[in-house]
Image (cartoon, rainbow, N blue to C red; front, top):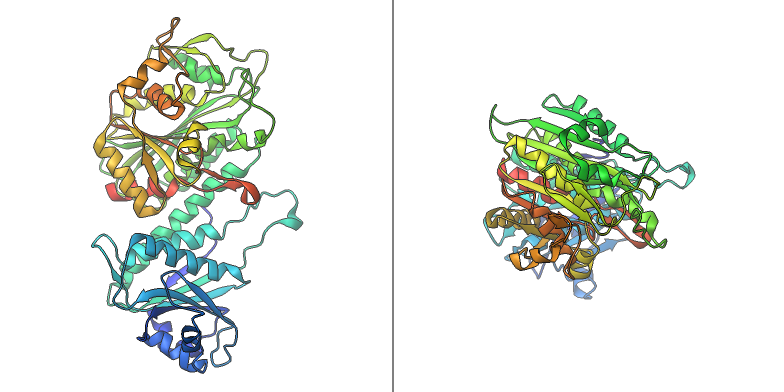
Amino acid sequence: MKKRLTLTVNQEVAKNLVKAKTDCLVVGVNAGSTMNEVASNINKATNGFIKKLIQRGEFEAKVGQSSYIAANEGTSAERIYLIGLGKVSYKLSNEDLDKISSSVTSALMSKKSANAIVCLPSLKFESEDLSLSSLLQKLGKSLESSTYTYDAKLNKKNKKKNYLKKVEISIDTKDSVANLRKSLKTGQVIGQGMNVAKDLANLPGNVCTPTFLANTSKTASRKYPKLSCRVFGEKEMKKMGMDCLLSVGNGSAQESKLISMNYQGGKKGARPYAIVGKGITFDTGGISLKPPPTMDEMKFDMCGAASVIATMQVVSELKLPINLIGIVASAENMPGSKATKPGDVVRTMSGQTVEILNTDAEGRLVLADALTYVERFDPVSVIDIATLTGAVIMALGYSTSGLMSNNRNLAKELLSAGDKASDRAWELPIWDIYQKDLDSNFADIANIGGRAGTITAACFLSRFTEKYPWAHLDVAGTASLKGAAKGGSGRPVPLLCQYLIDKA
């Protein structure tokens, strides 16, 4: 993984902040008449400018509010930003930490600063689950992921340049500096993982093929001693009975691949956790062809796979003391002469047969065999990640992932991890009443059915997950961004990593 920033915790820098030479100085300011020591020193150096802003009502120091000091001749900093922290007695929530992290990141990225200093006073938190470590992990993730640039752009002249290279952070606390540095590093590594997922998602479909994903996974495994990788081609999958997965790539010249990554950071023989990603490197819809507008965005249909490959690298980089299996089921869905047709019936690795009523509901087909394959590892839990349905966007929009599970504890743990990581999901039901929508006259199960498309898709997958605790993340709305910011978002890497960190 590529590290774009040098992030450090440096408590010494606050002792003489006025004379600290830096392109950008970010100072935390409390609301009300009480001014913390750092803000007071900067206020004196700038001839009372902070107090003037507060008195004029231009800066109220509400949590996350920011302000720019243009005239800073009394300091050695090129520019100064103020970040509101609320009153001294105010106890910060998880949402407040998000606001502070976002404001600090925006301030540092708004100008062409190469280096920066962030100085915050002592902080209070509303619950025992929150701490300075929580804030530093969020800052590390936010800063690293915000420096992302798409380096593979063919037109190098228009490539966005990242100027920020080094950030020093100082916080008024007696907490262990070593622990603070560890939290900052954890967040930064998660941010690096998000950028790995973005890179894979943003590559065009003629570059990022199933074979490319396989080679990327092999390359990652060579970097980390505890990570191994095995790739299965179409002949090997055929022998294993994966006709369901293979049916998706029938119309494509690109060979389908099943990628199996294995991280052994825990005790030998300990049962692993497992994550499974949908890797449709381009989805035309097959014979059930998609409409042309925005079809270019179907290169993002492998974002589930990207999140698995990225998360495996984050876990390896952090050396988490767990065992983890990462499975990627990858194919290209094309309408060729050998393509699967609506009405075709295929047999899955599990032995169940599927009537394919719509070839554009292909993600669940590749996942069905992958979810059966993962049984052999006797996993503690299995989470699949997929850009599976447009219906989840109708239900939850673009900010929240859909979560469905056959296990209450697993669902709660994932929802909690999403809240901590600010990569949230919302649980939808997969009650038995929805299962009948998948009835078929010609096979054990149809691949579509009913109006509740997100739920029935998860119901389909649940038929292949009865032997272990399982959760499904539908990230069709969250894994990529639309409009002017079009591109991979790096989600749900933070959620997955937080879940695994909590388990470790």
